[in-house]
Length: 249
Picture: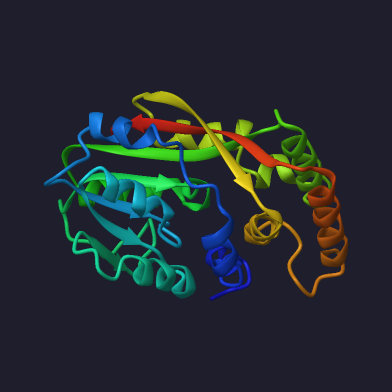
């Protein structure tokens, strides 16, 4: 695994990722069911990570195949769904899933599309999707609408100077969506909120791949800023929108 391989960013973040990420808006499950996710359907979840996205798909009644290249992240998902017969995990990438031709009804990517190479991805999805299959891209977009949310946004911008690109928002996200969905797409916006305790806040910060890692010169200052944020707020409520982009290839 090379130093610039995106999967290497998450190898040291798997535990924090599993504990600290916000999940998805409750309204996402019925939305996906309305798109044809459900009993009898098979969904490939690209960049499935620790399985938070897979839990959403399983809740629709569908079978999910988690495609995840990083062993630590994949191990979390395998342990989480060890007793779930509708869950399968494979070691693969979005651009090379290892799945058979025409084997899935739909494809999802939650918090992951921005890591993929568009043209190889398009070829791979065209290969594995059955006719009429949808591609659904989902991101949680943090909103600086609560006091804790505004302070958290300031931490991200302080410690990730290139945040507007690395944060996968705005023009960066729009470019990926437009490049994949050349035939157009639908956009659904679902409100969501995460309420954290102190440990959960540190886990969230520790799960962000573009913030300073342990052992780097900036990491002690990041921890100090996180502690100050936790001390400053009686309630650590963070607002999000779960943004859902739906299209066909």
